[in-house]
Length: 628
Image (cartoon, one colour):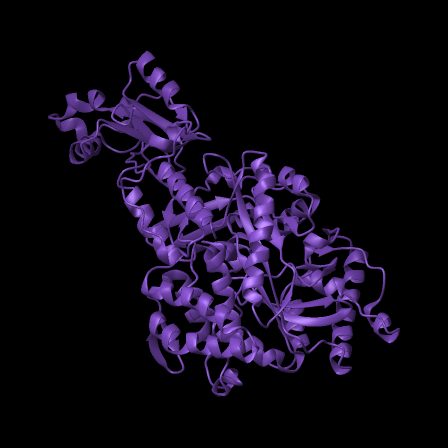
């Protein structure tokens, strides 16, 4: 969030020239400055230097770049260079960018103004992107993103991302093991932090009075589940239907510095909801983070922050902000300096990007309203509620969206009833209390209410995707879904008004048709040690004429056709003959990015009707004459 060159947003590693913390001398120097920053923050609080009012709001808008086929477009640096605007910055994925909005005081028509500014910024980046045949899409997780987009060559080619990746991998000393179970299940090993690039969010900043900061932070934790439940927008990843807000599970695992063998220990993940209520002062929150998480990055330091305060200067607490920028709680505590005045704020990190700008501003108005409208009965909530109930509410909301049953104030209540009966009225009061115009409050909060009686972004995505799968294979359905999201975002109507896509939705025009569009991914396979009797029965049960032979790592080792085994249908020895004796080991294959017409020629020229599709020698699909 820039305002005439001054930053209100968190100074994280993206704003500094960082290096990996490896030398003993550098580590000692960094820790010295980190502890000094804590002392300096305490001094500023004691001396009343932290700004108490006015209350400002701000946001960071992350978004995806896609090509004409609505797949990720790896040209963020070219687009960024063309626009030449300090409001925009890079993300770890070379197909993502971020816009930092100028802060604005919470009053009057602030949300309309914010909406207008955001629209203007995105219009500017759209014009720049169009020069590269690139489009902008807002989505918590882009439906059309695929495994090929999370390799290291898709990382934005900047030193700070390489340093981050190397540092986290050094901490882990093993690949990232991703396991998310929803309606479908995702099991994935990845060798870098690039899975983080799948996530885009609309991060909201709210300035907080230092005198009530800890109680306010506990309240922001208490409401996180219900707020998230009505804002979910990321139900799909790699074509699989997972959580209603899959980002929560994915981000937690994609940047975890713990090795899998230590996950069951008391060590807390760097991406976390927390493990207890906060008490004491805001510096105690920072102290807790420093105690739990070791630093792995450093930067240059010019001045001592304590000396600066003693000399009447305001420090930026560079060491503390760098450490804070490598920890990712869903509600993050932030320190910043705006117009030479230090301030404190909370950054909401769990709300996804999209589905439209108006939906995002509605999410912002709802969260800010509930934050500012807290009734007195919820003061010191840490003495009334069990933290584990609040944490459970948050993860249930991520899993089930508006189908969540919350444990709230000592009883179970549905998401719809809680929001309609308590949180929306609370939000109205909170916005009115700070002088937000009734016109703004009613317009944006009505969008939240309409979602409850209609559908959220995640519900629209799930229902539409399921319908598309009745007509199309997974990859094409993912592309079509992304294209329709783009079209509807361009129109600008809230997601609650979007009609669910039906199975007859038209495919993309002028799309380059590749094997990935038509291949079957629900494949039956056998092991080379299986019996021919099993093969015969599988083929008859499932009405199939070919069975790929794979090992435990899904590497293709051979293929069996009905012609290979039919002679054994009535022979007793079929129970003792292994697949290895009869399978063809010299198998003709294709890769997923082959043109369909080339795959068809290959089948005709070799007089075959079955073609395995491989990626790095592993079987990922098959195509048959019927698919062609």
